[in-house]
Amino acid sequence: MNDTLFDLPSPEARPQPPEVKAEPRLQRPNREQVELRPVDLESLLPADHRARVVWEFVEGLDLAPLCAEIKAVEGHAGRPAIDPAILMALWLYATVEGVGSARAIARLCEEHDAYRWLCGGVSVNHHTLADFRVQHVEYLDRVLTTSVATLMAEGLVTLTRVAQDGVRVRASAGAASFRRRPRLEAFLAEAEAQVEALRRELDDDPGATTRRQVAAQQRAAAERRQRVAKALEQLPEIEAKKKATEREHARASTTDPEARVMKMADGGFRPAFNSQLATDTATQVIVGVDVNNVGSDLGQLAPMTEQLQERYGRAPAEMLVDGGFAKHDDIIAVARPEVGCTVYAPVPEPRDPTRDPYQPCPGDPQAIAQWRQRMGTEAAKTIYKERAATSECVNAIARNRGLRQFRVRGLAKVTAALLWFALAHNLMRAMALRRAAECAPA
Image (cartoon, rainbow, N blue to C red):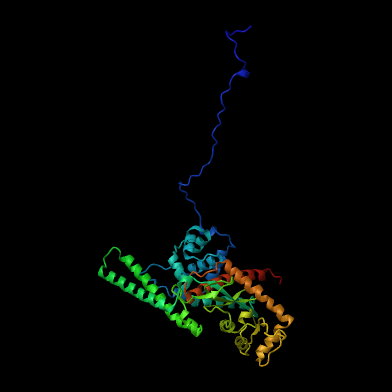
């Protein structure tokens, strides 16, 4: 019997309330909270980190010549200077890592653990880094000599066979900055007038609020005047290398007067410097460095051989160069008994296709005749293969580390930049060579 007045729907037919899904519980980021984390710099890097290798190398250097230039000394007023070891280590490590900008290094010193470890709490700025990079060319050159000499004393580098190659690196100058003499003279007159006008403005109203801006403009105008004057000084040298009918077309750069337009590896012509690297073939250690603004490698063999003889007290027993270096005068010069260097370089194809290029020509000096005959042997061809295996590898490593364009101007500063690449490369090679020697069976 039904106890209700009306029939009720069955429970299955009753409408069910919509299911409400609960909100998920999430851990959301809160980047405004303050954290206090006790961290010591020493624990940030593993024991075999590259930064520690760089610091160990710098600690072994004699930095007295750099410290002697510091004017802030005990007992006198002045803010303490940054330890040259820190700046040296920062540039070496940055070069190894492919960082070539002073501003980038200064930023990394605040953000990257390896750079922070090298600084050790010392604050550095990009101005100090940029100045240090180019101020000590002679010291960097001595460090290259002493570091290679140390490897020679350890028996890791023998200087028996050296490969030399030229690398044309883009200069910090645009093609449009090259001007002829009339235009350069007009630029110089404009720059001198601008400097004089700014000087008068500064003298007439020394208390103006724009005094600092006018002073900066005056410095910029003076620097431009110096560059234009330097370009005019370089013109006679450029004109001397041209034919008499083409000398009026000689041009020099107002941005980097010492840069020259050269044919690059891709066949194009751009402002560049000719960087010469001499590398030990057995170890790929760079033993010699030179920079010039000559667009050809012809005539670069003898100067590099003399440089190596001066650095290490003896010339290499053998020099491997490509055909662009094969100047007869250089081959004769390095073959002298007091030098005693044997040259391996390709013999050019004779104009007469019937003549054997490896047979001496009538009137050939003894050194040239021996060079021709030597390059015709299978032994010489096998030895010469080491040139490409050495030079091209070292060039590729330098390119990967940023040696694609110099960011500094002038031969002296460009030489300093190239020396940083050589020192960084040798540091990594020395580490690999010493590890290999330790693992070699007794």
